[in-house]
Image (spheres, rainbow, N blue to C red):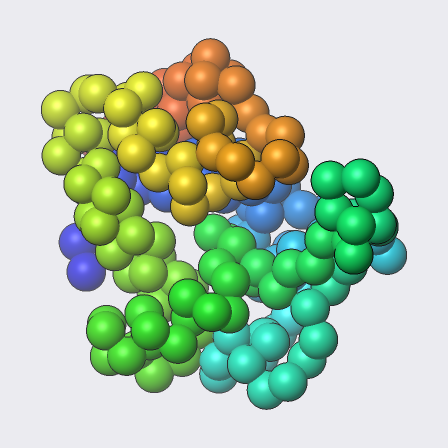
Length: 171
């Protein structure tokens, strides 16, 4: 799979925004990160399948509160924090055999394509690309997840930094 500089920078931006690549525990650029719960961060090392696919229970991310009376649980995993409920259909759609970094990249790119954001990224419509993808990643502004997140200005600045680094390394 060929990923151009703008798409690569956007994927790196998601990892930066979701704080997977910068996790203190990652040994694989965030591809091995499990959502941080109230008990702290964790990672996985078996890429055979999604870490929660074999019955592992979701992680408590937020204790019960007014917004989440039963608490907030998640099974988001990998560099792009893919939920288990999305792993199975994308595995089938893309004919994936594992949850490897290449499979995680393929799923993230498919999600971006489904939101019609690839063309926005390629044409430089960064803000519209973020807006189109905001319902996928809780760290992007403009979603209803109530988990905080990054500002558009932060994302724009980081994307430019990542894109310049990508263009420099490709030269």
